[in-house]
Amino acid sequence: MKDNTCDIAIIGSGLTGMSAAIAVYSKNPDLKIKLFGIPFDSNTAKKGEIENIPGFDKVVGVDLIQKVTEQLGKLNSESAQKVVQEMNDQQDSHKVDLSDSLALLDESSSILSISDNVKTVNQLETGFEVLTDEDTYTAKIIILSTGLPELKNTIKGEENFVHKGVSHCAVCDGALFRGRKAVIIGTGNFIARGALFLRKYCRKITVLCPDAELGCDKRFLKKIEATSNIKTNYNIKLENVEIIGTNVAQGVKFTKEGEEKEISTDVVFIELKDKPDLKYLQNFDLKVDDKGHIHTSENNTTNISGMFAAGTIRGEIDYAPVLIGDGYKTGIYAVEYLEK
Image 1 (cartoon, rainbow, N blue to C red):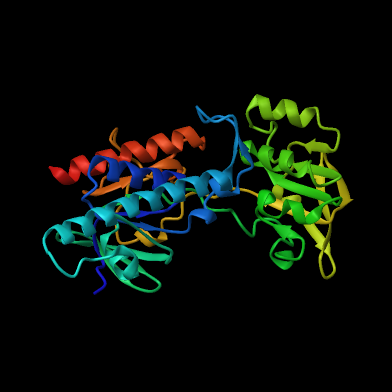
Image 2 (tube, rainbow, N blue to C red; image 1 turned 90 degrees about the vertical axis):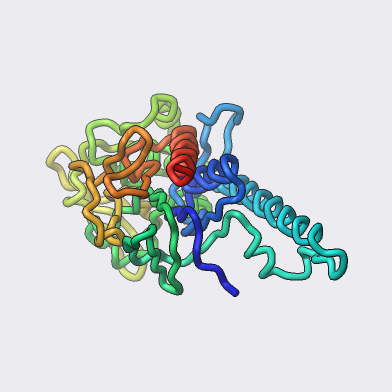
C-alpha cells in the first residue's frame, strides 16, 4: 500500500533541496523524506563550469546534479537494505530479497523523489498537506527550496520564437548552434557562464546587459574581455529589445546610447531570473522582503511554525558551496525542530 505520509517534505529538488535531504538522513536515517521536483530542471543543472566548490577543480552543473542524485540513490539503497535485514532477522523462513520487489524499495527508502508539480500546500493540525498534480501527501515539516524561476515573456517577440530560435538555457542548447551567431540577454554569473560556454560553439556571441556592469565575478569578466568572439553591450533597456524573424528568430533590435541597432542572429538565449514563485503557498501569510524573498530566522525557520526555507528562495547568494551549506544546515535545523 502506498504511503503518502512523511516526516519532512522538501519542495524543490535542486542542489539546495538535495543537500537538505542528505543532511536529514545523516542526522537521523530513520526519518522519512519526500523530495518534490526534478533535479535536472534546477538552476544548478543549467550552469556551465562551476569552479568555486572546495575540493573540486571544476565541475559542470549538470554533472554535479548527477553526482548528488547518485548519492541519494546510495543512501536509499542503504536504508532499504537495513529494513530488509531487520525483517529477515525476525523470521527464519521466507527470507526477503530486496531485488524481488520495487515496491519494497520505495517503502523502505528514507528519501523518496517525487517529480510531480506541487500545486498547493495547506496547514493541518499536525503538520502540512502537499497537493501535487497527481496526488496528496502529508508531512510534519516543510522545507522550501524552489529557488528562483526563469523570467519569461519580458522581451518583445520572445513568446513567438520559443523553440524557434529562442532558448532560456545556453548550457542546455548552445551546442545545437555550432558555428552560428548567438545573442544572450541577462546579467550576473549566470549570463557570464552562458557566454563563456557558448564561445566553444558559436562563432559570435553578443551579450545584451541591462545594467551598467555585467555584475559577475571578476574571473569571469576577465575571460569574457579576453575572448574575441564575445561582445558585451551595457545599459540596454529590455523594453526596447525586440526579437525579429519570420518562421524562426533571425535578428534582434535594441537601443544603445539612444541609437537604434539591429543585428542578425541564429539564436537568442534569455537568461533572466524572476522573484520567487510562491503561488503554491497562497494559503499562508508568509513573511517576505521587498524583493519577494522569504524572510527567515537565523535557523532558517519562516514565520509559519514547522516551515523552513533554504537557498535563493530566501535571498541566499547563488554560489554552489553556499547553496549546499544552506540546504545542509536547514536539514539539520529541521531534524532538531522535529525531535523537540
